[in-house]
Length: 219
Ligand code: AP5
Ligand code: MG
Image (cartoon, rainbow, N blue to C red; front, side, top):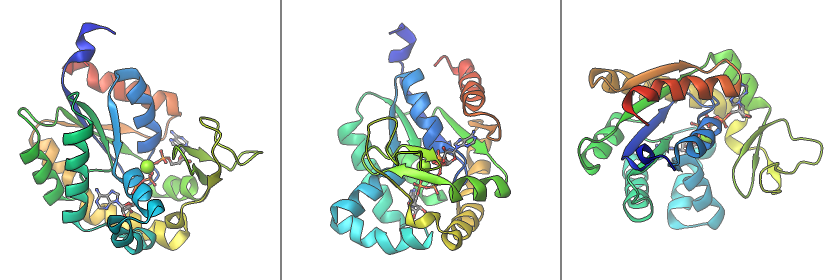
């Protein structure tokens, strides 16, 4: 591993539902040797296990609404503190509100978030992608279409469609993103930490743009 890969690196991945945050986070995690922490994946695991948090979060998630801040903040900060102590973390889907961003800034050691990367995709394309998306029930890798076998190419798990990928929930998630998460772009821009990339290119081209955006900070 090159020396510079041991440097602290705390990244936030922003973007609307279906922008490709999970897809790109998995690729960046490999390129940058960084821990991928997805708030959505963690919440879905809690739902599957039927934990108290999972039960509380469930109805918000299926309607396409945000899970209340106090629940999500506690879950993510615990996860970062106790399981991701390497100082290299890529947050996918968190923060999603101003209160979450402020709580994260308060919890991270200085200098806090290194960069906030936003993947921009048009609403028409988001709806198309989410309508055709299947997810692995075991590793949560996303796929376009169910594949011939309905099995995950990564781990062999069974593929399924998320309940919040139903058309009404997708519309709600897009609206919630615009109302509650888009204001974070100005928050990070005012700190000189925002970088926006075009998410309507091939998956590899988007990864390349993200890596180029991170070059100046010596990733
Ligand atoms: P979460 O799981 O974070 O969902 P989301 O933000 O709605 O985003 P998605 O996971 O749907 O999309 P993605 O951007 O990861 O795209 P993907 O890579 O899969 O959150 C779910 C719910 O949990 C929330 O609604 C909320 O209830 C709750 N929650 C989570 N975090 C929370 C928080 N912080 N606060 C409160 N509540 C929270 O790609 C999509 C599809 O497109 C795939 O099929 C993929 O193969 C394909 N694709 C990807 N890139 C490309 C490309 N370049 N070209 C063509 N296709 C592509
Ligand atoms: Mg995702």
